[in-house]
Length: 182
Image (cartoon, one colour):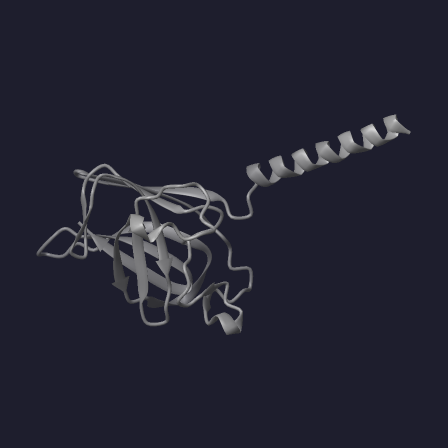
């Protein structure tokens, strides 16, 4: 009887470990790193990329939105979204010094608050301590004509004749937010 119980326990542990390894190696929201390099600017953003899967993404909590307006969002899935820069960045009148930071958002219908925080912990379920916030910028979202199935963060050129400006762009479903920097 004891041997049967021991074998059953060992099989259960094996199944649990196998399932955990499967989830770690095949996440539902895969990890992505995007890089930017232009002259002296070298930046990387690491984030997890969830899928829309016929869900309401941005909206009111009462409507069942996955990312409700006015509530902290780690700007991805699984872990904090991390931004690492090898040079100081000028972002809407603020300076993000060389280093590694968490980037999180509070989406809204008319504006998004994007916060850079000195915490670069792995999991992002809880909002990082606001005492570690470097700064927050408020940016209006843009509406897209075509839905983006998977959360996508990338870099775009916003260069004008007057200056060289770039943007960190966040797109998902029918929403786009561009954070300008130089």
